[in-house]
Every structure is written in C-alpha cells, then in structure tokens.
Length: 117
Image 1 (cartoon, rainbow, N blue to C red):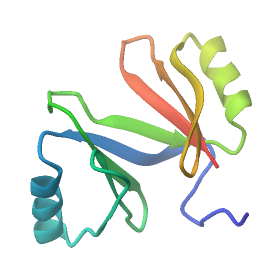
Image 2 (image 1 turned 90 degrees about the vertical axis):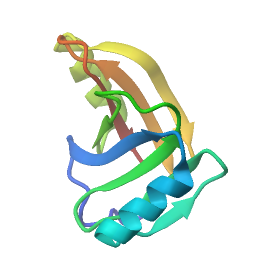
Image 3 (image 1 turned 180 degrees about the vertical axis):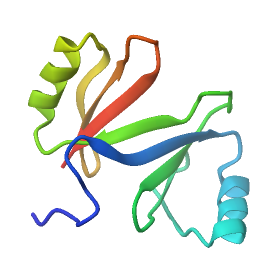
C-alpha cells in the first residue's frame, strides 16, 4: 500500500474533536474553511486536509477534548518507546476502518493516540 505523502513517522497527523451536533460542526467548518467530510456511521465524520486530517465524534465538547493523533510506520515499536519514556497505555492497540491505533497519557496526563495503516 502506498503511504500518502503527508504521513510522517511519529508526527502529528490527525486531530479528533468531540461534537454534540455533527451536522452543525460539518456546516460550520465547511462554511468557515471549506472542509469536506466523509461520514462513517451516525457518530463519526472525518475531514481531510493538505497537511493534517481529522474527525468529529459524538460527545459533549469540553476544554482539552481534542485528541491529538500521531502517525507511526511501526506501531508496536512506537508503543514500546512511549512506555519506556513514561507514557501510560490507556487503550491498547485496536483495529478500526483504515488501520490500527493505541492511546496513552503523557507524564502531564494529556491523552494522545498513535495510528498506523
């Protein structure tokens, strides 16, 4: 599988927002910035940009609720490095349409995720 040009090993590649109203969020970001969306069921919609992709999932927005997602060429090795550095795995590697990912907290308690194809 050819890796898209914007994917860089262990760099931020995806941002995931919570939204109480996905249709309202899509309308706002399309009108304000021209973003286009792909729906993946009733509780998830994704957008694609030139340099970073993202999505909106159903939920109640709260300060700090954006999930920063990094890309990895080798998910298992990146997970080992995160743990060695002091990160705490809060969701072990799982599959989703389009790839696999895990989620962790850093030493300050920020939640991040890493994904791979």
